[in-house]
Length: 180
Image 1 (cartoon, rainbow, N blue to C red):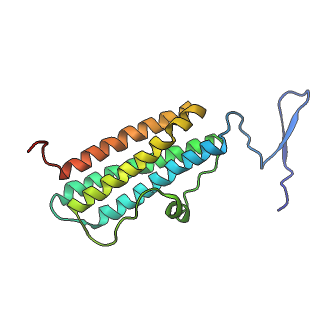
Image 2: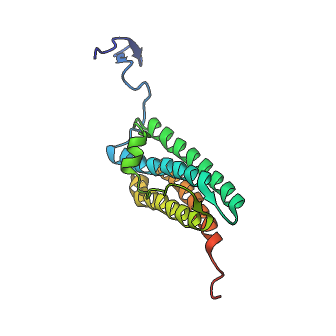
Image 3: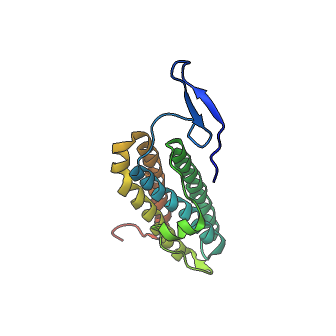
């Protein structure tokens, strides 16, 4: 592939540097491969959570259908928003997010969602497990992310807080009061 020779001068007139369009125009912090990989792991789980949430949303049946259906929409919306936030953070750090379906299928930590109709009771348990898996990934990479980039770790805090809240709220559907 031929290199684009378009150049632009940057800096002062003394020692001006020429850059090509293939180079990043931005300056600043660049993610290490470890940081990029950790953020990629979170991204993939969030994308898979949104996809699996939609699968559950379309195929849930049974008691409390409407409430479960609506709650799944909330989870899907937040998972999509968080995945976009993580992907854009990666780009800001000069990393390249990979949200292709093959990448998600190959690298997600979430178990596969079953095909066909699923009862509300089973859906609650399946979605809770997927929320907890996504939280597990975010928690697993958190300390390494925080060490290299506290700003990205702040994003993980918000994701963990919201997904743990969803896991608690969703799982409460199938619980009985303690000690009864």
